[in-house]
Length: 218
Image (cartoon, rainbow, N blue to C red):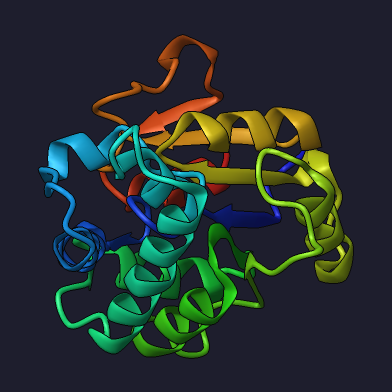
């Protein structure tokens, strides 16, 4: 196998613990719409496919399309307005990224979170650490479609066989397979409701520092 020259990361549940902010905004939006609130565990079942998908799944079954759209727009406003105050990087993520970058590994973020949020959070928590950052920005296709990931690799000057995608959800496994890159699963993310298929991964890690050994060929 060729050495790894690039690592592309999912954001929510992989780089950042974002659920407290996401859930608080979602429940506030539901309350304002007169809908029942949901627990964080319930919301975990719908992580990985973006905010619109999350909201569409947690509103009551009888909600109209207009109500679903209103709830999403309200959630987005509340979430952005929260200034992501409760969101934090996972332990040792920042120092690991710094070491990876110092070793010459190209680093990127590809998330189904809306693009403005991805860029704001990347700049806040990881300034200068990523060579490429991309969130959901129509008409670009979202994960698990591999198009945007492959475009990112081309811009970074690396080939799929030199790349690993790092994520916590089944959609991450799907995009990695669709792009023919290696898949590294993380144990600290949001896969409780839909566990990662560990036997199908190229690697499964329990702390960020293991990525250093991975790129060194251990």
